[in-house]
Image (cartoon, rainbow, N blue to C red; front, side, top):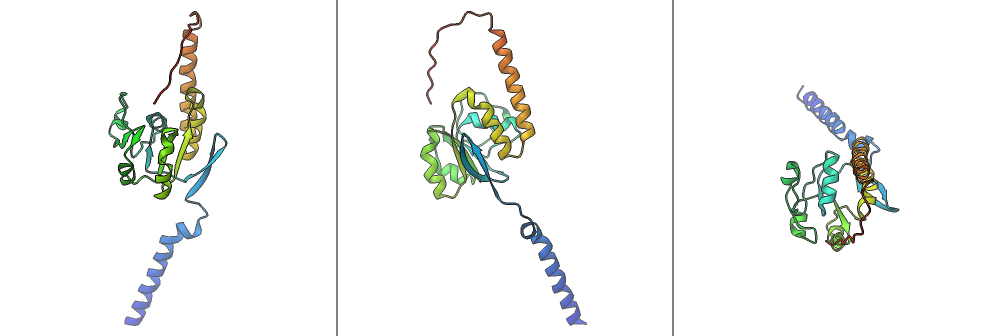
Length: 189
């Protein structure tokens, strides 16, 4: 009887072990996916849960998708309350790499050229990352679409794009009667 009980317990343990592993053994899902942005392919986590951002413009876009980053850079802008609470890992031009790594992100998004200097550290620490070229207003829609694909939030990205385009049109319409001014726009970071 004791031997039968032991065999039954062993059998049930094996069943539980197989059931527990079935998601990883039986599924064909990968832990990563390939995303193309601006003609370049990036391998990103399938479901990034801890994303550190090296530029707050990306943090704003993630926020629009309902994604709160695990770390962000310092900002003098008034951020939404949820973003204000996110740990700061330095300035956009001077990220504290130790603070970034200790945040344990499973994905990092940054903008070139400031984010380029962190590529080696991220690669050496096996942290998936996207350091992308961002050229301002013309890249907002493609970047929102790409972020929607990365975070499986295409519907929210589409809604954010529509809202963005509506605001942009409203601003353009409000200045149609204005006489064009000559300006010089300087961009620095």
